Image 1 (cartoon, rainbow over the protein chains, first blue to last red):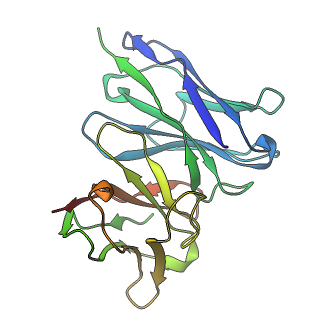
Image 2 (cartoon, rainbow over the protein chains, first blue to last red):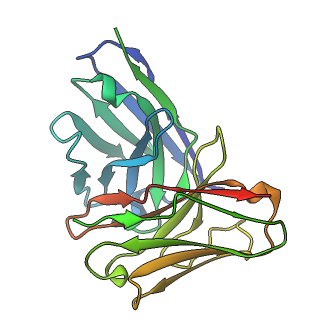
Amino acid sequence: EVQLVESGGGLVLPGGSLRLSCAASGFTFSLFAMSWVRQAPGKGLEWVADISGSVENTYYADSVKGRFTISRDNSQKTVYLQVNSLRAEDTSIYYCAKHSSRRPIGFDYWGQGTLVTVSS
Amino acid sequence: NFMLTQPHSVSESPGKTVTISCTRSSGSIASNYVQWYQQRPGSAPTTVIYENYQRPSGVPDRFSGSIDSSSNSASLTISGLRTEDEADYYCQSYDSSNHGLFGGGTKLTVL
């Protein structure tokens, strides 16, 4: 059974940083691209970043480029999102998602999410 | 870049069939796979269709996906509607720069 478990969210001051983690199990982690998607309170889904399988190409939404960094540790079956220079508008639930392929083409499984609140 | 446009809301009765559309504003709908995600209130999204028409294990065959090049749109069809199908549904695809895009979401009411 595919499982994705996010952690690392919390309350942070504007300008602060967090490192989100997503621990994966139930599939051969290195063979699949992974993604982070967020959802602000009462809003729709917003794609944030992708990292491909073993080649580890990365892609970012314009709204986070230069502030967020996606990475993965295939030995630990974990994908990370380092979020820096946080703004109030980054307040969201952050979901980890697994792609159905080595390259980013779309998600077949999701985690339960971790809440990031940016507030003074 | 392009946009994915969905109806804001649809409603149908239990047992009936409903179709939710997702129209791509530019470029061919067939250029990139389309996915459909279900999100019940207070819950994380789950995938009901990926790669245009594939269903993850555990998703009933009442859910089906298709693309139509003539209307440049993708569709999610749910047959034999159940009250548990009431949720928000989002379509999603990628552009040529490997940027993900979501539709605005459709609220399905089963009444």
